[in-house]
Image (cartoon, rainbow, N blue to C red; front, side, top):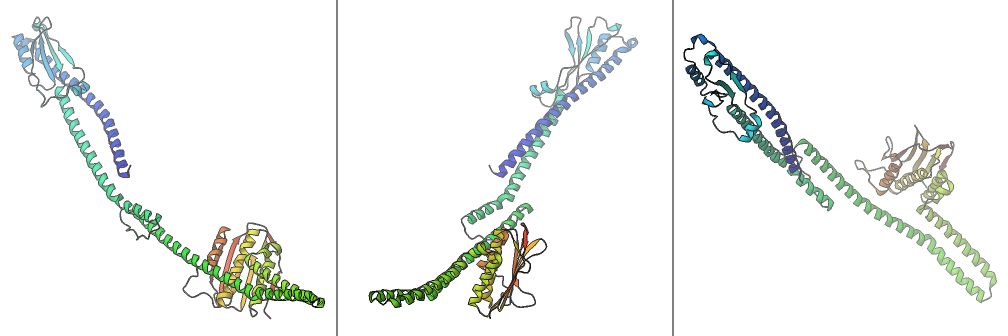
Length: 453
């Protein structure tokens, strides 16, 4: 059921309740009014009749006086005069003024009530002429009540119809843009590009449209960012695969070839019974295998931070620095890990931040010096990686996949991270701050400096 129909039903029910309550109140008021009017009319008529027959000295013809008295009530709207004989039969009756139109009998029975009768006490001269009775008649009064009530009901019904019409068109006009909003949501569900909605209509709906436009804009930006990150992820994966492939080809391939050559020579020497040459060839094979094992451990260390679990954060960072020192002999890396936390998950995140920051600095900034610091500060663990490289392009916010990954890791632990150019010098500053949720183990003085010789 639409909102407009619900409002109309609610208004209709409210009007029905108002009509019911108003009808009951009107009925009680009308009943009291008719009864009071009838009592007052009979009382006034009784005083008039009493005054007319009370002066017995001036009465010459009593019957004539009663006829004239009864004639005085012709055309009265509320009281009828009756002259009864000794047996109680009506001899004469006054004529009431008829109401402009007849009132429904059910309404008269509901409001009119029982008629009020007043017997006029006749003095001695009127003995034997019967009884003079005044009786109320509420038809004219009930007609007035019925006429007023009919007019009030007509006005109220007209007001209800007018209100319902205004509500119907007003609400319909106000809610019409919601159809456009629903269509826009459907387009979002189908991943279709949508145009910004016009922020018109009532202020409440305009606020909804404004919020929807911001949501759609953020969603479009997020989807664009996700596409860029996916492309960067694919590129990074391809670069890592290519680098690992080159390492295996350049480092492992030659030694495998050498091992194959030495193994073939051993077979030939064994066939020729030249056993003296076998020992030297075997030693050469062992040396080649040891070299390949060391290189494979370096590759595995890049793929999985097992050193962090085995050696701790400080040694793992030192081994990471040693890896980059072996590739960039001119690079100076200073490590200052004053404190560590007894939380493996936090240590892993700190290690990944340092790993990504150093990797980005070496690959994109061409620095000569990198400073790594891990310490507690104001009930927080602070991680800082600063380099003196070329820095980030001015006016461009960096949204690399690695930076996005660092932000997600830090946010998952309730921390904050900033990546920006250093103030006062060249290079990039990566600063992450984590709330101290675990016990801090102080290792002051654990300062290591790795410099390329």
